[in-house]
Image (spheres, rainbow, N blue to C red):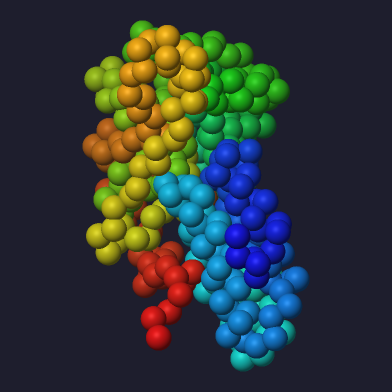
Length: 319
């Protein structure tokens, strides 16, 4: 543990890694909050020492969830906003950048919800996979407009994040039918839209999301059911502009089988990929706070937003 990294940064990093903090927006907000705390309470005596501490804090956060691109995008935003020639100038600019990022997060969710609500008509039924605050924002905006909706919610093994979605939809007054993951195709003819979130979106419009999304999208295309991805622009993966691939996180096998269950089955190898990749041809639209886009055009939005900011500012510079 780096002694120069604030304890709250380590605590938040641990909570992100263990999924106590989950959901890309909450992860991004927590990362910005952690860097803000590091900046405010740093006792670095020189600008170089301050920058090194901020990079170390960012690395501590970055290494927790390799697929959740909202995390490095939050780190990029704050570190790119760090500016000045004195420690106090660097401190103030970092705090302001973190606060500005968090304010953008707050507004983006509501703006995205209004865009997504325009796709939903009174009486529509949606199918969800995993848990997405962006999808819920679309539903909430549609409900606020007086539209009556219903939902078929996949439970989404192995962590059953669909249960969270079911609870939130119930709170919004949306009737829910909860199904096991393998029943999705059976119900696709009864829904008007498949609505999912994204953990990251590549420059070619590929969507990286909770494992099972790709299979659902293929089945939906076969059934003629539109697939809508709701994602704030901080989910765009600028590294893919320069050829970087997206790492797929492999999670602990204990999420699938306990040690006792595994032994009883003869100790099979247990694979637990957290995400899969849905090619753009299976996605009808990507809804963001900046509007709705066909997946093939998402690269233009990415270039507009990120430009050349595809670097990793948390890496120690080579001397």
